[in-house]
Length: 327
Image 1: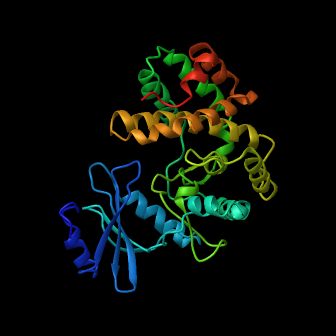
Image 2: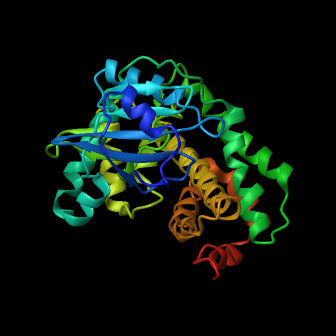
Image 3: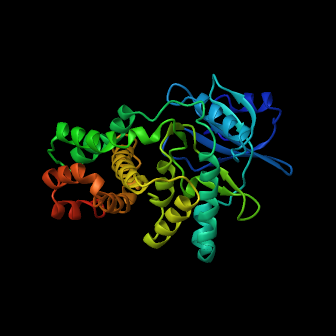
């Protein structure tokens, strides 16, 4: 085994009865978690290392087991050591939704419909064993833009006004997310695996699940920070979801609210990944996310937040700042 592998890996594989397996490190994500594919003959499995104190594997285990018990295709847990952060998982293979639809664009609509069918199935379930998506959590996330993006751009802005604007916009939505549905929070084309055909999809990266608004994961899928989803496909898939659910008259407005909140959060997170963690590649996604944010701000439900942006980051400056990050 490579010297770059984490301490304790060999011990855990012995405990999990996978001793002697080949270990292949996989590219990381935007966290401290690490992933490995392990092989032994014709068998393979996925190994996740989510070491405390930076990571806590318990939320992942809780969500994975709940999803699996309720008919959603989360990877099955093969072995675990919560104290050391090791989880051995079912291997979903290597066919991600992102790469598949990029390679086979004629199948794009069918694959997205299947992903939305999974959301519809999820939203028919009662709320899961998760915390509620509270106003304080929404605000913590929205403030990532003013805490990380604005300082990185040398912008002096009205922080208190930003908070008031978001509270005004989101307060109207909160009653409509009770009792709520399970919100995976990072449901997009890079976290969906295709399993043996277009009709079977596996879920990844759901450890931050909360109970919240049904529009959240829909906007996560259709306003993808890492992949261009055409406005035509977004509209068609939004309508596909709305026609098959009890989406009410306010659903489009709430979709815009959550799109703007999520995109503001993502801009802040991507700058934080650069500034704090040295992961500059995430800056390349910001123009796409900023454009999505601008579009969401045009909805009348976002008027207080849009007014804050106009006063603090005027349109001409936003156009310049929303482009590629200076080298």
